[in-house]
Figure 1 (cartoon, one colour):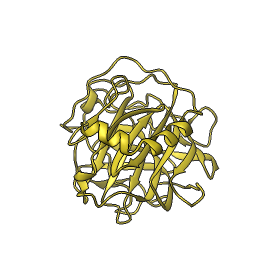
Figure 2 (figure 1 turned 120 degrees about the vertical axis):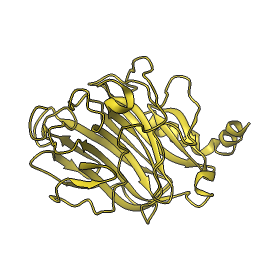
Figure 3 (figure 1 turned 90 degrees about the vertical axis):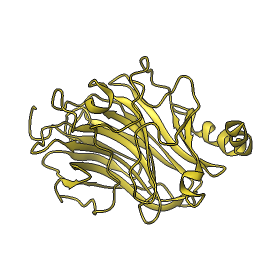
Length: 284
């Protein structure tokens, strides 16, 4: 009943969203992979913004790991956002449960403490393999939660949080607040939603939108790849494109930075797209 009420009350908004998303072709996915709700040994995607993610700042070490980013960010006020991304299978240390390499779209509150995320991740500790998997995540008042759970309501029977994805294909990822709940979409399908009650109904619009690649390094390591392992400034690298705000008056315009450009960088930058990736310090 809860799902039906949310869909009915937000029908107009959802219809507009899906109409917008329909312009992008769907990317095929493989059968479901393991969707472990708990973080276990896998490091959480770190909440961007504090400490400041600055160009050339080097890896940022906190939340039990060191992180590098190539990110496009916009400060705005919006009900949602959407991007298309290349799904890749970046290399990390074999058997390493302390590293991951991912790309995602994240929407945050002005204080950067409340966040909703959707993207793909290569994370052996979370998924038990080195394939990219669809994931969702959220933060409440700066507190960690868990992948693909901790209040997340799965709706789709085919687009499931945690499912394995096909490397080398592209997909659209979107987040939008509908009737007070944060819905996440994969290739036009409503995967599910984070109920607004998780934030006590206080988080209904986002002021920081970030589309980015992130690498969580194991202790003493920077060998993990981002994207498909090619530098963003070179041809054939990973990419994020067709960035659009939903329910905002601002024009879509990303500002792109890289924390360790000698390891991972960006290229071919426009207000709504950029290439990204890199080999890290070399093969693991």
